[in-house]
Image (tube, rainbow, N blue to C red; front, side, top):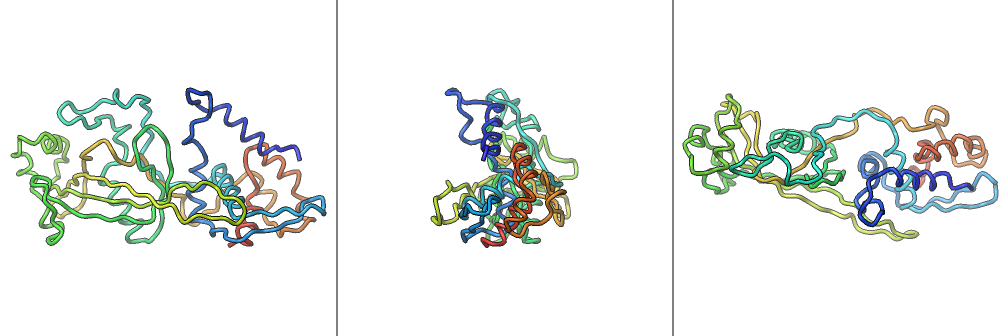
Length: 315
């Protein structure tokens, strides 16, 4: 009744960087919470009615309400992650150290995810293991977390630019010696300078990554179709003499800056989870957990047992 969760969320807004008008930046939010929740919890599609702790007030939680609670829980819970990349801290992108010939970023804090890392990670996690992952699609100074669910790849010859679809990798890769001889192409000269000493050949890659994007919340039982977005990336991979991927270079300063996923087979550890391990929706249990729930609210989160109950009822 004292709006402890609402007030704690508002107080968080006082601590973050503001836009010129004094408001919180429009891109800021809990995307690090909704992304793992979006594929590690069942999608709520039904409303759930519950009687409050006073034993008389009925409250209806709609699917979008339940998504919001799950988002907040995952955003504040502790869990082990597998993480690749970093955050580029340059506020002004024009000041990032870059190669004089190509304009490509030379500071690895902003180069972040190598094309080799992107290819190996996505091909194994999405293509082979059929698991999801999360990434920030753009190196634009803002931080976005998006759940990836699909990708497409094709090869091209980095010297001629022609696609090798019919011949696949063998029709598109070029020996590193031929690359080094191509002295008129500034980008290929850049690749040759950067390439590992074990590089035998290079191949051009066009990759499209598909992911879910945020939808504005809807009232009541209204819902929207899944919001699907994608990014196209172009890069060159370095291959050793056995065609193992050993490195790569982006062709432009447009690429992901980090990739991550929660460690598998591990439950998130939220505030109060050690005290409230289960919840059956009854008034008696609500009364018993009210004190812990208020404390969780003041710490900008919600109880995992309650979230899991709603998710199970609403799926």
